[in-house]
Length: 256
Image 1: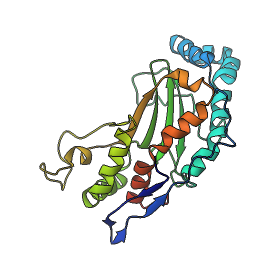
Image 2: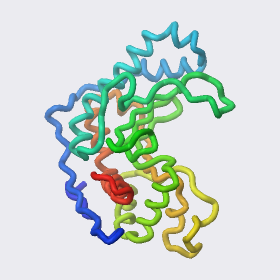
Image 3: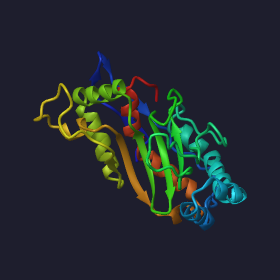
Image 4: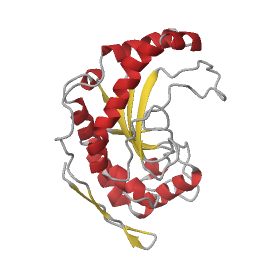
């Protein structure tokens, strides 16, 4: 993938920025695998014993096989994330960093199990306050692992801004999609059943405008995260998403 990204078009009286993406550095990245079979085994056992009592009794296993490797992964990803964009964050903290907490928010769910049975790691934009900010994401679970990039469930103001940008600057968005598709990513997430307000059903990018999530997803084998060079592998996959990230940040008037 080329180091430079050129987005062409206009939006709100401005020219879309030319985003220069530095090449991913390798000198400071560890070549050892980060996760192990024990990480997935813990998640499997948690799914079968999802209670606070069980989790407390197996806290050491969680720390050793899940949280510690995840924090190490985040730390080793820092140079690559900052090279992709200095506006993205990679924070290896147990609480309040890039590692999403294991506790579920079950207040509005019929499922009252207390813990997530996956590991979620998000490198989000520093101006974003929560998981709804543009960002890069790694998902680890027994039922499947994937790498993702984009924005999930944006609030209505942000959603409208993205749709307006796609309408006004379709070429740059289509180039971003083409770059993703060439590397095995697909756009995923929720969509409206009808055209959004203000857009005609004959719009050439109607399916994109109907999206409520703008997320590119690529399934990966868990074994890739256990191999030497796993950090470099993930950094390369995230690099393929740089055009989409630059486009979404432009639409939301965020630096990238």
